[in-house]
Image: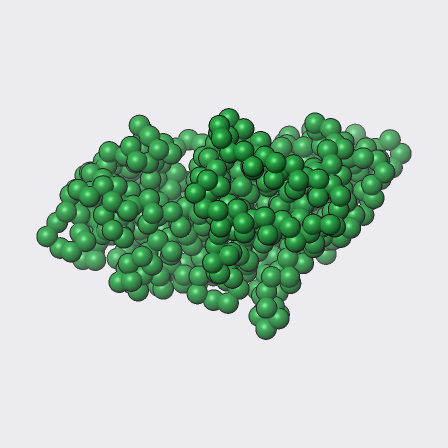
Length: 545
């Protein structure tokens, strides 16, 4: 029997045994909105099963184990042979296997595939975020490979497979494969045109040998990689398999794994190419153009992944406040805590709504939607990923000291939060990408303004924000120094438009009052007190059981 001084009271029960998908009203409504009726029931069943798995005790244990036991590099076997393998905890393989089986690398070839996959990625990332990297790379490699029909025919069925097979073997001997990517080098980072890795042509058509060093290579345990290197005709894209068709290991020397702030379960590496066999993808000298669709798809995953982290953090904060008593009542009933929770919930719902709208644009695949994505993806990537760290930090504070303890899971979310704002181009890169689209592609701006204009007249604050934005857009001379401010406003106006069209009035009103009407402070919890904050919080609350 425990001593009386160790009696536990007023502690919050763990949030387990719930359906992560069904408990998220913003997400379920977005899926219903964007999917055709004929596939909606099937998608709901798939996402509900994945949601129940994500909310289970088992998945939460897998997530903790994968982060407590990070991957280990083995460069040589006991005899001194170079093997360059990465060992992962079994929990990592279980998480990854569950994700692949659920179709989280399969979007490009099925009806509503991008919305279904984005919703699933948002749900499953809440169990553990690190293994999302190979899922994202594998999914995003498809459009780049489609520039070469022969390569696409060989690899796409394996990339989109629902079968996960670990271990290095020739791709022809596997039922499913994973892909990574290697673009950045020590001297250039995002400036990939300064890459020095060389590609020397061989006699075989499209075959090369690569020599060079990649400063960041994602998911080095993968079966294949898309990389950039300097060919005689300029910077080009190449497919590098880890194992050659005859079973011999390709020259792929993993120098070290990165010791990262977060994302601890996932392996990020530095690799050396020294006579590494590769197949060219696309034309020589067109490497950036070839790989750019892969980059765009992974940028959307940055938005979806950040929305997932925000949703999980806000869910935990509301759950804690609904069970924790202080000063004579539950925290969730206290006006000031309710203001904080509602503010966080607004940010989360706006991110989810925007992420699924972008996924739906991929599914539509019309000229207008492709033009819309050209601006909307980098703008969303810029803003949503930056808001993620602030949201998770504030949500952690809602748990007080308990939130600062590893067992709560909140520190892992906080360490993960900054990643997506850096991965696939940091904030300045995204802002400059939006500027390039504004200056070179008038059809992209037209598509963006048409989307925003669909809610015109619904709220005077949105109308005023659109007017101000048009004034900003009218003068693009010397705009680089104010690019961040411009892109932030574009993202907020887009989110406001989407919420006015699709969210409950209480949510849209609060968003427009604070984010567009600027009746807001500099920290969360400073919403106008006259708003219906209780309804906003209740909408965001996950119902257990």
